[in-house]
Image 1 (cartoon, rainbow, N blue to C red):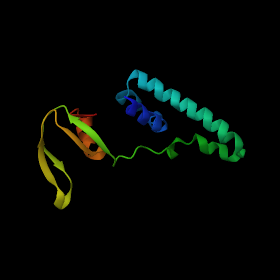
Image 2 (tube, rainbow, N blue to C red):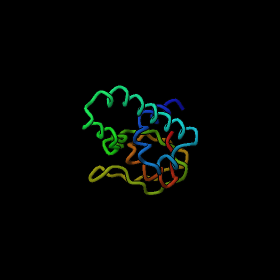
Image 3 (cartoon, rainbow, N blue to C red):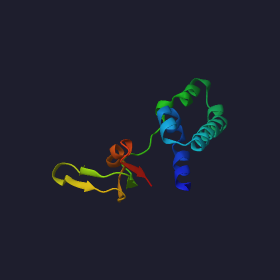
Image 4 (cartoon, rainbow, N blue to C red):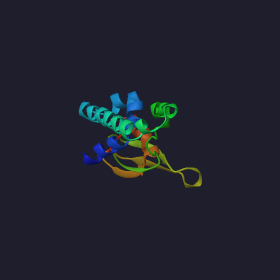
Amino acid sequence: MRTRLCKIRDQALHLSSQQHLLHTRLSAAEKVFCEDMVKLLGTHLSGAVLDQIPPRYKSLGQDKSITAGPRLDKHVFVVLTAEVPGFSVGSGVDELTVDLQKGDCFVMSYLTARPLIEQGQARLM
């Protein structure tokens, strides 16, 4: 649980800019935590940075498009919630097709696990 809160804390600005993530991936308590982190970060940055720079540059702090998202190529722990026959791993010459069994645990890049998670066939540990 602590690791999940750390990830929410680190990605609070990204999560708040993606409303569908807030509503589909976070519990009610996690949503409140994320929104509180965004408020705290905004207050801190306003006091520490934006109040100290010339007025013509203050609008830069309002642009949410400069917020970095999570690194999707990082590896995550995944547990399968359903059988997945014929799952392709790798690409090109290194591509391998495997049958995944319900309950199996794997470490794989998030990009590889994403389709399984979105289809409800796996969950992050």
